[in-house]
Length: 364
Image (cartoon, rainbow, N blue to C red; front, side):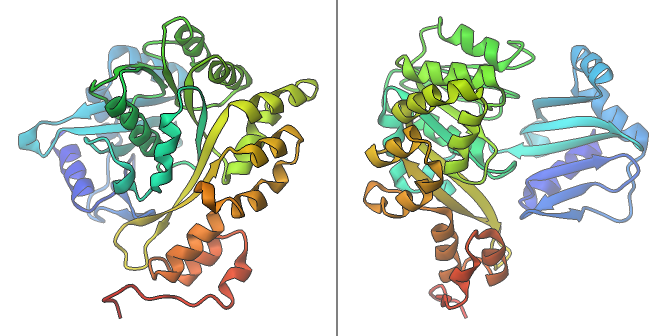
């Protein structure tokens, strides 16, 4: 375990997001979105990775791993004198060379909108007492951190009952004005759907669903949003409009008209995000798309015209809306990200043919 703690210290010191323990290879870190080997001199033997698993997992988790061949988990390791404690989430799985473990470092402090670089407009979303708020983006883009910041705003602002359903639990909340109960799928409840069914009888004001991944969970989340609860959920799409499409397309065709009406009435907002490597190599910058549901957006959802939502968002700046391409363009013009990154991440590459780059103040 001492070498694992050494790897975790290195991970924290260089600002890495993930640590890969791969049987038959050196420890690998993901820094600013890119992989790099911690050392070329030490190859992890199979016994080391197996030993880490035996040390950090419970007997039940080891049994689940043996049966399922992979396992999601969250844990806290180490003590202050060892450089910890580190709160981690991860996955352990078998591959052809043996056992692999991937660990992601979770900050001890709940982030704020400001620390994440998110627009202050998002504060409006937590002031609702009913409705659906979605956060979407690819894996590793910071969706959980965004939701944590929003939930903590509720925690600070009103005496609400918050229930989170996660797989696994990442950020650990301390009750402020609110009462927060956190449930972990697989440990505290069998599935997201069962947790949501139970939550509706547990008198919550706010519900966070870690992932809207199947029809039953999506249906229950929309129902909860319609019946007086503020529901937060995450999806894996690259835009706000596609997040709405994903919800609707989960239902059979004969139910989609009704679902469009339900979503048009219950949706409060969607935030889509990307993390893009900074040009100076100092971390990653957040590009953010924000949809605020207004009458025009609601009509497009109800009429099945979600393909027009992005255009409507471009004219909705007065409501705080912004589209991903404009957010990326702004980062480029401020000299924060490179031309190559901006062009590769944007849906409209024509924006960069004549777009001038505005150097940051004090930069060459």
